[in-house]
Length: 380
Image 1 (cartoon, rainbow, N blue to C red):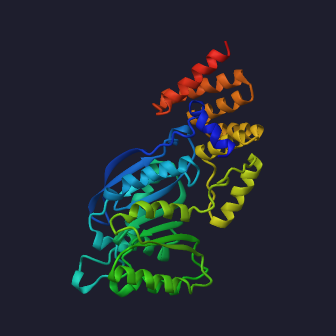
Image 2 (image 1 turned 30 degrees about the vertical axis):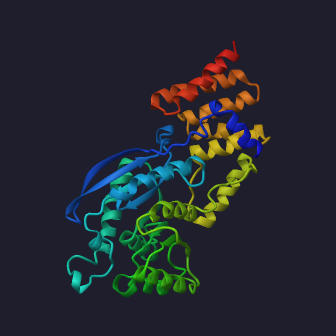
Image 3 (image 1 turned 180 degrees about the vertical axis):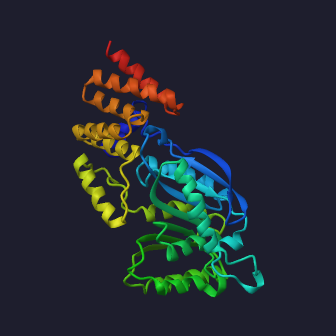
């Protein structure tokens, strides 16, 4: 076991780094759509770090079938972002009142009036709902959409037809069979002129037209050239249609944000190297997401514990500049100062961690108070 993790396991009370969250702060409301002529339940989970800054903007994840898929996806995002595997995100679940209508792009005779509304639904999402969300919350320009089954078909539709409004899509067991696999005809129309988009699609152990559609996709997508679509296809043979959203969304998030973690192993980077890394990443991914609380926290503590204490302090201090109200970063900075035998600075940082933890009702409060008590004892 590397020194970084050994020290972390021995020092659980010195930092909140390991105490990852799996329950985001959430709320819900009814949104009336003129386009759909109906109310839709919208559920929103804000990152635990949302109150750590007054101006930081978060990428958005739109969860289709929000009434059934929202909870586990929001929890996994909170967990994965804590370890800088993916960005902190605002998660929005959109309940589906008319799945067949809203998630299919063509109207079939046997479902006349009950299918083919995907384009209208897209206008609801991006011309009605998204402006409301941007008005109320600090949302960055990066949007990911995830869906399962029929809504997986819809997220695939967005990836292949609306890269102008989304940057990434996740399609779990998508119903590609719809209308004789009509959506796969869109693959031939993809050119280098479309915006960059990342697409992850997966299939569980499923029979008949579900498996046939994925076979068709694998064969067709491998022939693509001269396109800005970046894709990954995965099969989960041990999963069923109903169980696969759990693993599918985790792997999908890892895929569409591949390369996001600048220090995935035990090697460390300086603040200058981190800035350079993310400048390069922005060019590759075609979007720029400034470093989050958890990135500063993970990279700063890792550097401190892996023999680059000065780097760690510099990274954590830079984090405080961007997130001045973060009890997480103030507490970790107190830990780094303690490692440097700078107990006065450590206590000052710890006092600020306590202040913001109490203001935020932080779940980390007991750990922060314990470090604060230890520092007061050691500085007497």
